[in-house]
Length: 577
Ligand code: PEP
Ligand code: MG
Figure 1 (tube, rainbow, N blue to C red):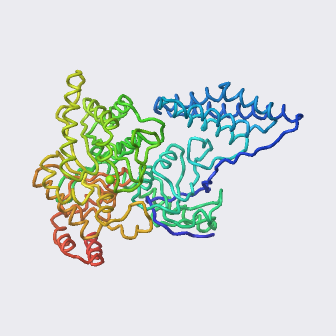
Figure 2 (cartoon, helix red, strand yellow; figure 1 turned 60 degrees about the vertical axis):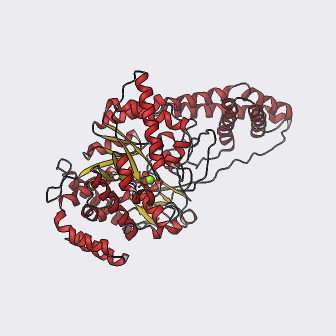
């Protein structure tokens, strides 16, 4: 039994066998065959093709009903390519003529085809070379018996109930495990407010990141306990420890049942201040959890996940269908955030002048959208069209100056005019809000509030940019502090600016779902919280038991303290009133 410590995510506990990610780069052997071996080599190759085809068929069958049409088209195209004479027959010819092994023959033929595609003028056909290698890789893995412990489309293993162990996971990889019923994940790197961690929370998946050594100490199929609350993992626990954790698991479930009794209760403080509790979602699938806890609507829909793990951007109609579906299934206000790509969130597909820098200070969010209008415009059209089917608002991430706001408002105005001219219905008075995530925006909040219909404080980024710490870098994770006086002053300033301009201000970063800060935020005047559904009832519980008139004194003291440890002591007192 061995324990490792890192940063915990989620409140739960997961118990299950480890699934250690392996780097399975393919090395192609080159074997000269005797003439007598050629026929059986061709047979081996045909068997690998058949097995690969069966895998494709299984993938098709396993596609979720609501999977984008493109997923099935993608698999079908690869299946056709697999049987194409240029791949199958030509590889067999090479095996026979050159008397070489199937792997070598296939890769030789794939290389020839890739060269042909590379010389094509047409960008679409040029991109086909990636498909050739994808298909070849699948067959190669079959031939070489490589078990794909990578989180990509080659992985067709049953991951149900397993605990994924890796050096790091990108948000895109985390989305991949979303549909695979994985019990939990643990990583060497990463931090609690990375987008990977946020997705884990939305999956109600306990996880531990920043473990340093998980991949060294854990072997495939080791039994693991992942304690998301305490940030501990236990490798091959003794039966006594296992029993203890199982009993803690049942206590957590009992607390959940207790919280469920609050679902129908009106969300207000003990002194009758109405508080709006909204939900954060990443995909349409998250709506169910929000409805279950009776959220007042969606305060943040992170649309970028619709663009991830795919070969092409979703077009306007696919986006429209998705946004419409969400708006109608929620049946309450939905704030759709425009694409927030850049930093740790990257896209697989290519587009002109694509920047792949992962710097959080780079061409991210609204900056990327304004410089890639061909991606932004279809999204705006889709959101506007969906606004005819529900109470939809638009939210712009990472605004940092006035020009950006003006440009965005102009583009939205133009887009509305185009839709009107085309006779397409939409909400012509749609509300447009901005996320306050950059210190410059917080400082300018009063001015921004004159232009925007609402503000939403994104504390994950606001803290990152205020304290100059990359939110995915675990080396500086210890500096990530929502209680830093600079952060609290900025939050207070934004809430005030909203009040002065008489527009709603919400807070949708992870801080909103952390009960430790609920009273402090109430005391600062926050009345709209948006968080993952998992936390909503816990926060509601705190709200029901808080009297804002009694919070003022200690909140005032916290705000006038410039000593973080003193502020923390005061916060503890505030939470005990
Ligand atoms: C935030 O920055 O607080 C936020 C809600 O946006 P995201 O976490 O998606 O960057
Ligand atoms: Mg953000």
